[in-house]
Length: 206
Image 1 (spheres, rainbow, N blue to C red):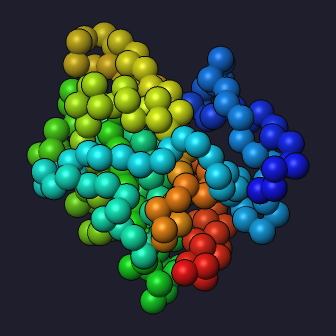
Image 2 (image 1 turned 180 degrees about the vertical axis):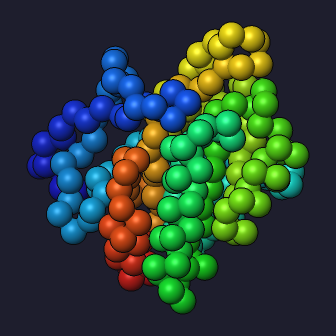
């Protein structure tokens, strides 16, 4: 995006146990869409710059680990009834659509429910999806920090019992290019074919 482009406000989509909610006061500036991409082009953004978190096996991960690959980062929780599993499943479809380039897309799921989503829980959960998908497990403090860095909203909504709560959270995927720079903002509901097209375009830049 050129410096002359005028930013426009867009509101993040929030999910509470899989149901869409109004974004309320959670608003932040995104650049005007680049017509070459189906997602919103946020090239040059000064947020969503990196992470340093353990995955479901305990291995510390940062964006540097995935240089040479496009990285898609999504936030959610394992007890989400539809949005989170749908997104992870559709990411597997994106990899299929990429054909021989499918291995050049790394999908990363960051839990917003570290109280329940332990490494063991996430290991079992991720077996339901593409074997190369990774889950990251922040502590409560790390979650607060990375949510601020990625401009992600999350909130615990109490249930009938202490363990029956659900998590309200932003439903958005950030896409990083092969050099580790955040490039795209994809809202929930973007078709796998559209996202695959965007990933192909980023891979061609390498």
